[in-house]
Length: 140
Image (cartoon, rainbow, N blue to C red):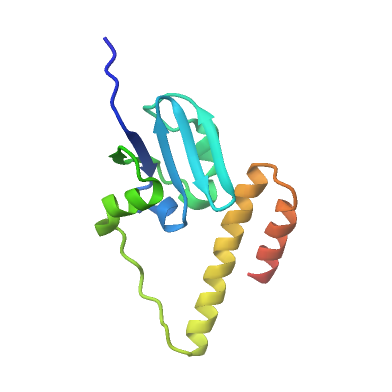
């Protein structure tokens, strides 16, 4: 006998790397949805484990950490997920002063985020993705 569990199961790394990068990964009834700033990506598969193709797609964000269930919600998407796991998201200390160190760190973080976003776009074979990846790598 199979038991159906209501709601959407959200997956992320233990350190919540996807959510920190503005991505959410959820599954409901075998339909996987990855919400990204560039739009939604859908896959089908088992509710129990992230499809390998989807795991590979997210490597730049997960850095080979396992994707595990982090919450089950009736709705809410990214906002609901942030509310559910908000206590686990600790923002690292970042200097907000006008020092050279602070400026360099902001620039490097921006380029690392651009590189990860371009990696996801390249793996999806999106137009101009390779160019964006080269630009981010060169700037970094």
